[in-house]
Image (cartoon, rainbow, N blue to C red):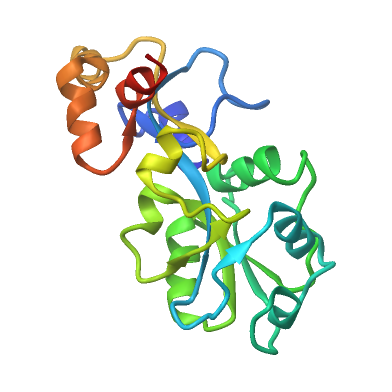
Length: 214
């Protein structure tokens, strides 16, 4: 992931990540969870498909399903876009492998690999037969359609109450000896005021989940 690489190389004071620590990450950097996100599947606004099952998602990524007609859509190849960083596993790809593919990799012959989830989202905006995974907090700001998964549409409420099951943590990643300003920023993000601010931006805060569990 680019942000973690930049942190390791001293190019930034801290980074953000939508995946936790994996093999190859520096041992001394700290992953501090500050919020929750969810993995969502996006298509072009004109696509008539509204719902997809997790088994169908697995079939798309494995290459067993390659045409939209197999999902109740129009006849046309599924153009699968996958975020794959040139420097390590991307957060979205890591989430797809962990939450959907049981650790397996993408094998679809229709897959195109691009450098970031932002590019993936832009391609789906522009491609009538496009399909991709990305984060809820990012997708909701794009001109795309988010699909229901197993009949459940991704919303903040559905993520909080657990009805939408593809929840994933969001982290701030800091070096072993962070600057005082970084420590203050992380402290604010974890404070009650910081958590309420996160919620106000349409992101699921740690506080949201704690309150739901009460």
